[in-house]
Image (cartoon, rainbow, N blue to C red; front, side, top):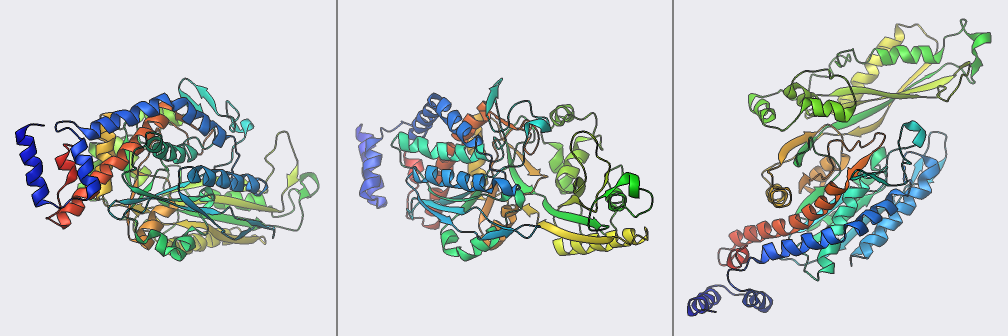
Length: 528
């Protein structure tokens, strides 16, 4: 060490009181050495070297058919939660499996909800504390639905890892765990405190999670930031998400009698439930995608000129998006119109009919009771109670025009509010920096048309900064056949999370130093 550097060290020590640990760390670092870059290199090398192990772990998780919508698979969902809890314990975290009670099915039966996971790793009060939210339940999947491979046997084809839950959400949950594991394997201090909240019923609307958060306010008291990685990029370019649509999911039940009837014997002489239901569903939305329910657009936030300009710079290829979705054309012709109707305008989708014959072959039956299922994606300023009232009033009026003696019941099954974040929060800055270091680009700032119920719930109940940090690709096909995550996104995503820990730590440290001018910014001293 030169005389000049010795003087600098003595001057710094006179001005700023350091702990012994900090002092030892500083004198062990040669001046001019970028410790942060060295750590990043070590992290990336380890992740690359162990990527096959990480992929195998994902394969093991995808083999569990944790479909939360199927009561017959509830045991598998619970098994998946136990596997996840064990994996987090292996990180050295304290883990609590919280009893979430039971679920009453439409047929009157009750089955247990899967437990939720609350876990903690680290409690250093000088560090930032980040709570990671994820889920390990999945959407329904069957080979005969159009999958090219068994949805519960992960198959790697051309660098893509196919399987139900690969991108939604087992892959991202494991990538976060892999990032922590990498620090531990390298015997490096994890630069932030980490908490987990993992659930097993996200795909059915996260019942009970709001109460869980309310009852565990102490768990969130010292949390600085909340990160969710449960969505995908818009294009091939990495993105940060600052808003999602909500969801109002409805059941429309029409009942004509107590039992199914033969269409040859009774067809033409009774009011068929299916005919009434099809008429109702056909009057919900027109061929241009416009929702026909009066008043449904009244509370939608107006589109400002400033917001319009945001869409102009987003990297979005219409033709590529068509290829990813497998359709010939969209309802709109420009990038801006497409993005606006994906993100900030409501949409209505008819999902299916329960009780109708849907098997292979033919069956000449008149179903006695059928349930139509549709949802309306919610956007800022829309209110679930108002939407529920409008939907019920409209369907009752349309049904009255049929003069049918059948019984109509309209019920709201899921009511999830939209969410918008503050993109100027420190964790967004840290994530932008981490994406630049891992992928070499500045991310697009996007919204997401899907619904992550806890984003809004977390924001409202904890009053903490919430960010969505996706690693999935635009063509991953979440909720669809042949869901996948690319090996590259899974491994680079692991690097992204590991880098995000470091970037957020430095930002948080600097913010802490600004709050007390007498404290030095250690990151400045070590050249990081």
